[in-house]
Image (cartoon, rainbow, N blue to C red):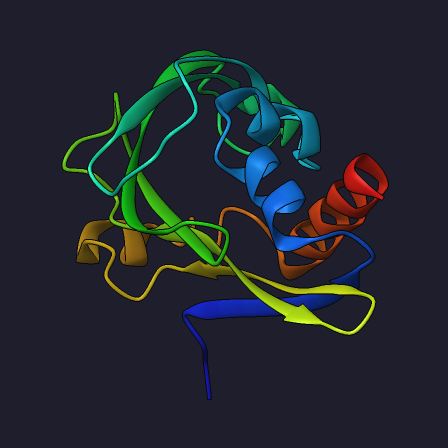
Length: 153
């Protein structure tokens, strides 16, 4: 059986609003990225689904495909203040890949249970056939949660 989605969880000793402030800020995405691909970002913190910001990327950090430096537009697909943020990306590769990333926050005693997910179940068949997914391994999501914890605790 194969899966087209990773879900990882970690309890973080910080309130949901403090964590969400990092996740809704473009520079926060760069600060907690464990892959090394996100170099910098442009844009204001997002406040609703449909909002966008730009991230300057460097694929050489993964050393898997020779894309070098490029930009992507992050498009917020779901947004619930202090509870859920989800996005997809659009960039130089067309049609858009239609993979999504997100965080769900649940208040718990002593902090917040944070679920990070990455879903590539809706990718175009040409990308599936190319064998490029998942772009980020499950361990990368776990590492990013560790950096998020270190950032907000």
